[in-house]
Structures are given as C-alpha cells and as structure tokens.
Image 1 (cartoon, rainbow, N blue to C red):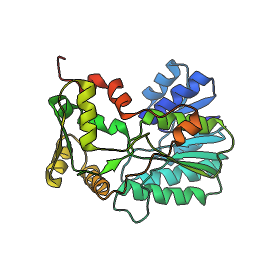
Image 2: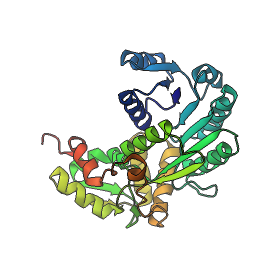
Image 3: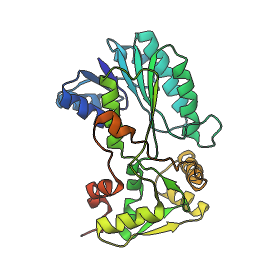
Image 4: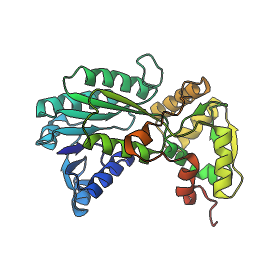
Amino acid sequence: MILICGATGGIGGEVCKLLKAAGTPFRAMARRQEQVDKFRQRGMDAVLGDFDRPETLATAMQGCDTMFLITPPNPDQFTQETGAIDAAKRAGVGRIVKISASDGNVRTPVPWARHHALIDHHLRASGVGWTLLKPTAFMQNFLWFKKPIAKGFLPQVTGDGSVSWVDTRDVARVAAAVLTQEGHAGATYFLTGPETLDMTEAAKRLSHVVGHQVRYLNLPTFVFRAMLRLTGNSAWMAQGLVVQFADVVAGHHDIDPTFEIERLTGQPAHRFDDFVRDHRDAFARHGS
C-alpha cells in the first residue's frame, strides 16, 4: 500500500488520480475529515493525518510499505518532514519517495531550499529506502500572476535569468512511475522542462498563446515584495520568493534540460506553450 501525503495539493492530488486510473492500491492522507470524505466519495481510500500532530501519523501509515512525501514551503517544513520520516520508519514503511528541490543547499538563503537539503540528509541517513525527485521551478507558479498577466504585464524581479520551468503534472507522472516501479532505490532525479526560458521569452510565449500583448516588468525588489504581501503571501514567503528570484538573476536556476521526465515515464515533458494553452482561460482578458 502506498501512502500519499499532500494528497489535497496539486502534485499529490495528481498522483492520486494517476494511481487510481492505473488501479494501484493507495491511501490518501488529508488533514480534515471533510477532505477524507471527498476522497472516499470518489472511490479512494483515505485517512486523517497531520504532520503538525505527529500522534496521527502511526494510524495513517499502518499497513503501508511506501510513502510519497511532499509539503508546501513553510517555516515548519523541516520539523514536519523529518517527523514524518521518523514516523514512517517506526511504522515499518520501507521506501519513501520525496519531492525535494533542484536548488537544495544547506548554505542557501532560500529557506525552503535549505529545508529540503537538510531533510534530504535526514532521509538518506534514516535507514529507510529513498528516492529523491528534485524539480526546478514550477510552470504553475505563473498562475500566481494570472491577474496582471490578464491585464497585459508579467511582474517579476528575475532580470534576464533563465529557468528550466517544469510542469507539476510531469512531476506527478514521474512520482507515480517511481512509486510503482522497482529499481529507483537510492536515486536522485533532477526534473526539468524541455527548455530554459527567461521572463522576456515567457512574456512573448504568453502573448502568442493568450492572444493579447504581455510585457515583462522587471520590478524593484521592494515593489515586488510589497505586491506579494498585498496578494496574501506571508512575510516569510514574500522574503523567500525575493531571495529565490535573486538566485535566478545569479543564474543558479539555469539548469540544462535533463529529459529525465521522458526517460522515466516514456512521455515528453510539457513545453511552456503547452502549459499556457492548457491554462489559457486563467490568463485571458476578462470577457475575452
């Protein structure tokens, strides 16, 4: 049995869909009873479990031999994931497939990238079998800026830095494959899209697909931080994003495409144009 943590999120939810379609037994873990009920209504096994309440994890993990581990960036991420790893070991889980980060580094100022590096060290030393998936920045992050894009501009602070943007649907496809196959023990896979793009090129692609002009605005850092706060991001998240995008300017995310997604799943990764086309309505002008 495979336990899917983060089952209500974008990647975890997609993994659940893929496993269900394949007829693979799995159990979705969710924090709230209404979420568990929704999974069960859709014909999926589901259980209550909360990383912030470690006492709930033993029951959630009972009878599972494999776990998919993912958490959203947050100040408690290290405590949450290392606690889950330790709970999995106690519960007899033999293998953990973890979503990490391509920029994971114990010395980085990017908080979640540092967390991932430390969690990865903990997992490798835990005695539990492991596989690490290290995606680059997600194409879905552009949806954070869907309102300004609909108005014709893409606000960022990345200068002319490039990223091999990856679609979260492809990350989920790799996760589903690795979770259900042998031969991935002790492997680390860097997952990228098929091309690298800077924001000027991304704006051109957006313009072409959505049908209206989108201009890249390279904002001053303080303006970008204020915009993030005004759109509901915490001070911790806003500062982390500013630091991460400064890493893009420095070229730390300009990773050559690895094509691991196609090798591991047999299908090519989505191109940025594919992503925009699939989400065109989100980026389109209102009323268009």
